[in-house]
Amino acid sequence: MKDLLIGIDAGTSVIKSIAFDLSGRQLAMTSVPNSFVTLEGGGAEQDLDQTWRDMARTVRDLAAKVPDLAQRTAAVAITGQGDGTWLIDGDGLPVSRAWLWLDARAGHLVDEMRADPRDRRRFELTGTGLNSCQQGAQLAFMKKNHPDMLERAATALHCKDWLYFKMTAERATDPSEGTFTFGDFRSRSYSDEALDILDLTTHRRLLPPMLEGTTAHHPLSRSAAAETGLLEGTPVVLGYVDMVMTALGAGLYDPSGNVGCTVIGSTGIHTRFAATPDDVVLNDDGSGYTIAMPVPSAFAQLQSNMAATLNIDWLLGLARDVLATAGGKPSHDDLLKALDVWVEASEPGSLIYQPYISLAGERGPFVDPDARAGFIGLSVKHGFGDLARGVLEGLAFAARDCYQAMGAVPSEIRLSGGAARSPSLRRIIAAATRAQVRTSSRQEAGAAGAAMMAAVGLGVYGSMEDCAAEWVTPLLGDCDAYDEALSQTYDALFPSFVAARQALRPVWKGMAHRTGARS
Image 1 (cartoon, rainbow, N blue to C red):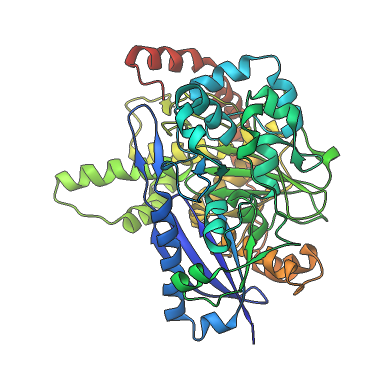
Image 2 (cartoon, rainbow, N blue to C red):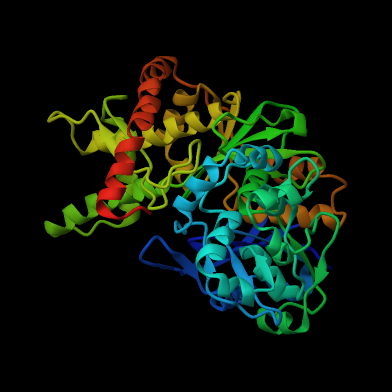
C-alpha cells in the first residue's frame, strides 16, 4: 500500500528528506550538509550537480531507515531555498554555479533600480520589494556584467526547480517564486510590464512555465529512480518556495483567525496570512514579499530579515573563542543552553542591538545592502549576558518592525525554527510584539508543507484546510500570553530601535565606501 509521502527541503544549510505517513506523522529523516562558496565582492555560489547528488543521497539514506520505502511512497514533494538564479542550457546542463539568495553582487544595482520611479509600479504588480537576493535583480546584473552567461542559458530556475528538473526532466517553477519575482500576484502569472521595468523583456525566454503542485505533477524519471532508489513513475510534486512551505507547515493557514507565523532560522521570516488580494497591505517603502500560497486566492505576505540565528551564532562564536583561549572546549549545544541563563540574569532593555549581521545587508522591512549590526548604549556596566539579551531583543524588535510594515502585528504568532525552543526568546518575542505566541512542535515544517501539497494533490484530503486540521493544528502548543510589564519596557525602547537604524544608514554607506566593501 502507498502509505508514505516524502518531503524534501533543500535548504541553505542542510538538505533533508523526511518520510511522513498520510496523516502527517513524521517517521524518519535524513540529511546532508549543504555546501556553497563565498567569493570576493559578495558572491555566494553553489554547484548544481553536487546539490542533486546530495539530495539523491538523502533519499537513498532514508530507505535505510524506512522499510520498503520505494514501494510505499505515494509521492515525493520538493521545496528549497528561495530566490537565487540556477541557470541551465538547452541540454539541461548547468551554465555556471548557482547564484544563491545570499549573493550580494547585485546590491548596488538594486539601489539604482529602486530609485527609478517605475519601480513603484513593479512593486504594485509583484507585491514584492526588489532586493539583491532575487532572480530579477541577479539577471539584470548578469545582463550588464556577464552577458555570455545569459547567452548560453536556456532556462533560469530556482533550487527546488532544478531538483524537480533532475527528477522529472520538466522545466518548471511554481506560482510563488514566479509571481513575486516577475509577475502579477493577483493573477498568478508573469507580467510583461514587470519584466519591462526590470529591463528583462529580451530574456523572457529564460522563464519556465509555472506549475501548480496541488493539481499537477510529473512522474519520476528512470534515471532519477536509479539515483534515488525510488520507483520509476512515482509522482513528484513541485512545492512552493521554502518560506511559504515552512509557514504552511507551522500553522499560517488558518482562515478563522488573525494569525502570523515567525520562523527563527538562519533568516528571520515574519509572515501574515492574507485570505484575498484585497487583504494585502503594500507599504510606502516598497519592501517585503507577497507570495502566493497553495490555496486559491490566498497569500503569505512576509517581511524577511536577512539574518536571525546568524546573530546568535556570531555571539556564541565569540564566547567559544574566548573560552578556548583558557582551555575550554564548550560545544555549540552547551553554549545554547547557557544562552537562556545569561539572558535571564540580565536587565531587559538596557541595550539596543541591530541584527543586520549578514554581509548582504538587510531586506526587511527596509532594503539596504550596506546595513550592518551593532550595539547601542554600551557602558562599563554591561557584561556578556547583557549582550546576549540585547541580541535576542534585537531579533524580537526586528520581528515587530517587520509586522508593522505589513499593517499591524497579528493577535497570534505561531513560532517555528530551532531558536523557538528557547524559552527566553519566546517570552521576549511575545512581549515585544504584544501577541499571543504558540510554538509548533513540527520539527520539519518546510518539508511538511511540501508534503501537504502532495497530500492534497493526490486527493488524500479534499482541501488544504482539511489537511491542515490534521497535519498542523494538533502540533500547536498552548498560547503563551505576553508579560505586560516587559511589554511596557519594550514599547518604550522600540521607537529608539527604529530611529537608530534610520539614523545609521548614511553611516553604513560611508563605511562601505571607505572600505570598498560595499557588499
